[in-house]
Length: 343
Image (cartoon, rainbow, N blue to C red; front, side, top):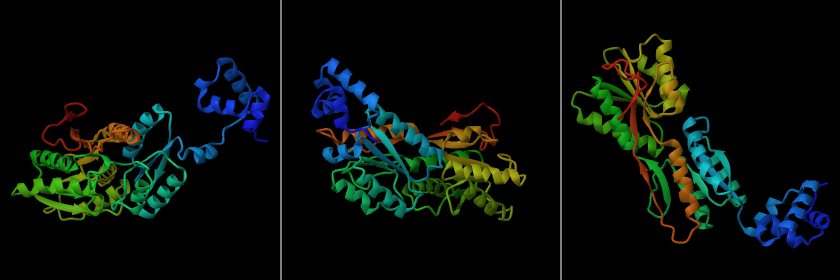
């Protein structure tokens, strides 16, 4: 049978209120009494009823994090940054994976509301759903992660993805490429569309440059392989000679398919990824990638979330600057030269 708080009080010879103080306000109890109560807890194997505590307090000691795709290492790195801050504050993290599906995201938000979480960090699907407004209306802090906020009345942490697209395209043009592809065009995610906008702006400004937009079904390694097959299906005279991928998983898929088909990377085809996950540098041909400060994004978002409960909080929307890390997959005119360089 599960031991109750009354059982602990009886074993320790104290009141139920004293046991409660030991659990929640130990500084109010003398050292000797605390020791007696803690010994009784250990002997009986008592575990506090967190659900009951949440009902009394109105909130739990948990924070929710909803990400688009837990299979993407970008989000696991963001989650690590969040966890560092949350754990240091004595809270636990509930990680939810929406799979970029609005209905799944909505279901998780409902569960987090039921769990009385202290706040929610979220990388939303393309459209901001009503569940986020419902949480905020109930007084639950919500911080957008890797996504700009539509208004100034909430916190958000993002990266300048337009700039990221620009530096990727400028790099490939400097390497001599004139027929570029952007892989990931169908995605409705604003951050992906910002990357595409940055690429398009650079290509438009280069009179002799052309851009092909490819839209694989998923922003995954399989999607990258699909896009590479499409590129190879174009006649050589019109075929893109380089690709800027919406994320590193797509870039790895493009690389896999090109190598499988005997296409030399970067000799015949150059590839630039996005996010600079650890696998980018470890690829068979190390990938050039636009680096985002993944763990720092998570840490900053968690700090803003915790700060929302403090008096005098002001909403902030920090915007990180991406950095191009050049490696072998795109360095056609400068072979060799180490693991990579930041730009």
